[in-house]
Image 1 (cartoon, rainbow, N blue to C red):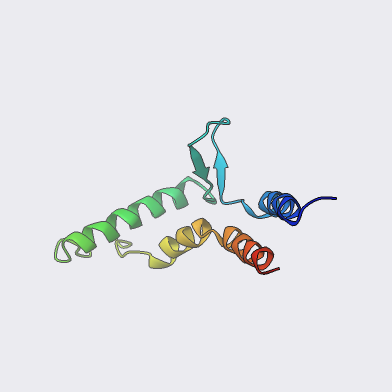
Image 2 (image 1 turned 90 degrees about the vertical axis):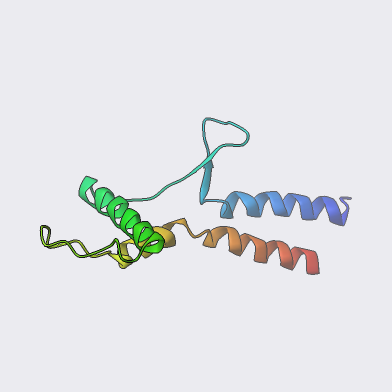
Length: 106
């Protein structure tokens, strides 16, 4: 008969397989992971990078960021940046922690 600890360990391993989705190992290397961000096309990728750089410039020196008269779309698209952050938010992993917490309580 299995001990309670052995059962819990097996349950944790099974649950981990379901929930650890945000980070993926790079080529089976021990300490290197990637997180996937999805874009519709190269333009959206470029816009995201541009907006993040503009946001950083604004954070460093708010007077440096001025809406250029040359380009009509020079404002920071905060919605795009928030979408990126949302894609990186590890909700599955947080749900996993809840499952672990429930196992701990039993």
